[in-house]
Image (cartoon, rainbow, N blue to C red; front, side, top):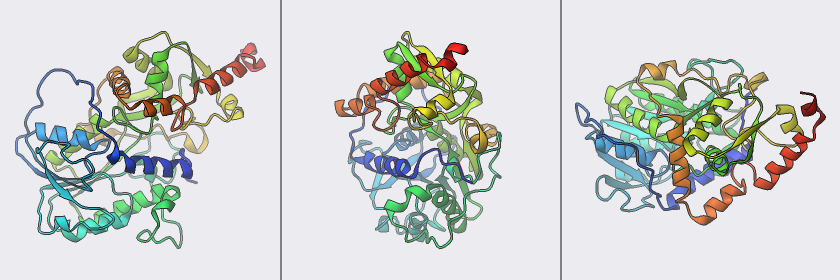
Length: 390
């Protein structure tokens, strides 16, 4: 049985939210520290599908800093975003991509493709016209999540019987997300055999993340006071900063590193206790963490991943969900910036968001808990006889 920490409805919402990000103004990121990025030994002609959403802007920034030529294909909903530093092609992966006709690229980076039809659509022009195709997939492609340390050889989710992945309506994509991404991986191999890279990230976090799944913690911890923490401090967790995966993707293009890689971090096992402490170190404040057991959270209908983000109880079929092996990626140079920096930059970006987005995050509309709801559960836990006996 496949463990899907995000419900079908939630997944559909997140996908729709991501698709709508192109309509949002780009907020400035926090400064990333001193020093210039080293130039690559040989410039590449890179096509990025998308490029203006979450990880895309950092791919573009880093690629340009490394001396590469960058072309974007998207619907051009953010004209002028890169101030003439890139070549802009207008197209829709689900429709007209004729702007690609006759073009050749050293590398193609496919960020947004969820549907196999999108991969097939661009392949009519790109197959045979690139030396390297990089597809950003997801660890949600895995069929099972019970084994801690499972690597890229683990089985992926098959398509349900009778489902045609090429004609599936977008509104039905949420409940088949993992299977569609897994099939899209096979579509990539079909069109770009032997010259493809599949990157399977876990939870991507940091500035520009409109889902609020990680953002909840820096914002809440910075406010201080008693902060409800899920499960036990020793529960495992994994995440990756959007800037780390973006920059590594460009370096993978430079290496012509083919194959499949889990892009999860950090480099060493991380616990929820360490995660929250690292966030507190980055944002400051006087937060006091109150750890509420899983069964109590279940009793009060506080769900993992959605209400308590970046956390899935390490039990049963989800025992390995936050313990995927990243050994292959580490061997190819995946690096991670310090957690306190990710937390501080995320909070700084959050403060630049439109007021309505900040208020939506405060209300737990996308992820996390509203203050009143958190206080209610904490009060119940304070009065729980189980706590008094512990």
